[in-house]
Length: 274
Image (cartoon, rainbow, N blue to C red):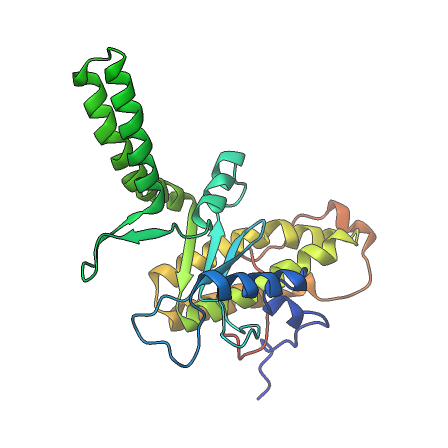
């Protein structure tokens, strides 16, 4: 029996499944930086290893890629984050904050697992110097000492608080199956956005507009449901919305038609992705 849901992906779709497809030189630069400053993913890795993650930011969110030791491009991201649709400029700052490079940390002593952020040590030093200078100039100790203590505490713990606030505006998924599903949806969305940029077809423009809403909903499904049931729901959505994005002759009345009647979605992909 023929499965009508298995629609072959269009030409050029596969390139969007690789990191930094629009800027190949960026991957080589990130690989060189990872070799200098971090831990790449290779055969010597253990369960305790924390490989360097390279964040590829997009308008809809990010893809976090693990850096292989041989410099090859990975096929599957380790994490995918989706920004809330119609995000404000302030909410977009959350995306940049969550995809910042990890803070450098300094161990307290050999054999002690605890560590401090490098910025905490720097802030503690300068706050101590500034506090002592201020007290020498006549500032009461009751004011200077609390400031000396609070400054490094804020530097150490404030980023975690900001992380929690920023995550209110994003949905992220991890795991092989969940990332594979969301990765292909993201690749469809990127493909449609590029196709809509060079076309005046209403269907393409409308599909590009609602694509991020599907990514947002899909991330929620993959967070709150098991992958199998979430996959069935995503296939149903993509199948219902597929006719609006099948290539065909431009329709002069398309500009006045409402958007696709099915749930917001993107074109279906091969069964392997589901």
